[in-house]
Length: 188
Image (cartoon, rainbow, N blue to C red; front, side, top):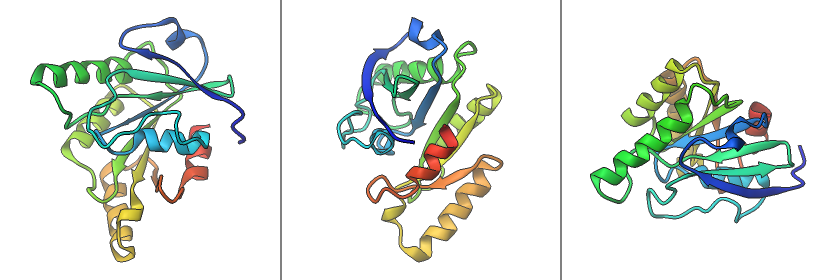
């Protein structure tokens, strides 16, 4: 698929007309600093559409990007560690759950991004269970495979696959652009 256009539409923290306008939504979820923005930028073949930062918890709203005037890529705040007060982290969790688990928002696909080097965490398991309970269509991306040695990679991917079965797992590197075409096939 050729990306002809990709633009930021708006940031969301509550129900909005674009969530119900019939245009398919692909949501990107994961822990803080797992590489959600980098994966989005890979898909649209731009370095600057979704803002990525080394600071955990920088995304505080659900950012909607319209691609080819035909689908949205939704950059959801990261769960798990984020800078800020306990109250702030609680507010971030509410925004994530509001969007990802909303019974009236029908995401075409939810891309759950996991750090391949770290492996699946308790917070990843909790999120996957919530998505499963909400009957969401999930694909798992094992990002940052470039940080693993070749002899570690196979075992880490197998461990992730075992942990998230029956969901498909795509080994991915935003840095080396590995897995991009496979992910595009899965989400579109």
